[in-house]
Amino acid sequence: MDKSNGYEDNAATFIRCRSKGIDGVGAPSVRHWARSLPPNAIVLDIGCGIGLPISKALVDEGLTVYGIDPSPSMVQIFKQNFPDSPVACEAAEDSTFFNRQFDAIIAWGLMFLLPEETQEVVIQKMANALYAGGKLLFTAPAQQMKWKDAITAIESISLGAEKYQELLAASGLSLIEKFEDEGENHYYQAVKIKL
Image (cartoon, rainbow, N blue to C red; front, side, top):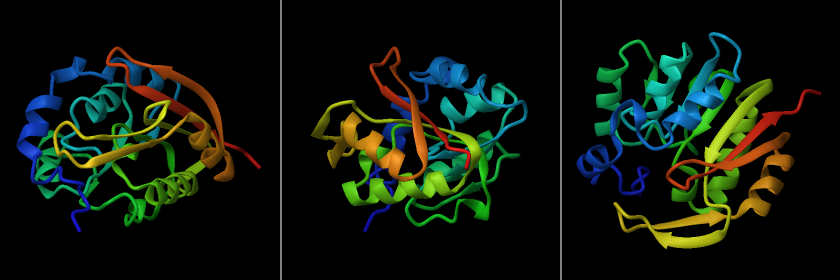
């Protein structure tokens, strides 16, 4: 099974379409979110790709970024783009998340590529990998829907805002904000509840 959900075979197309420099779609929203994190926060970028523009936005805000992506081609380029950032070539559902916790985790453009059961597993894993008070940001449509990915033609699935909120709550996370960016990407921002 292709853990990259077709992105390894389509890496060149994805890189050409996605890598639009520091102002690529989503980068302004991610920079705004990054400014809400503690100085020098350590952030895990799940589904980091080559790191442009999301990891770059985080690094530019002075944060330490760790990356995870299941595409060997993209991980290789991420290493070139961010030689000081640890990166692992792993699927989110299989990853150990570097056997550590993080101040924040971001999963931009990833969740809906995963089957429903896998999304549930990954949300719980992200919650477990956050420090108390740590923040999570991920993108997925607000509507419950299925569609064919524009690059891979593999089915994508959004569980919908209500289901994502349920999964976050069940994982010890509190949804604090939902918003959309200039590319009409829908964001879910949550915080790990301090016990």
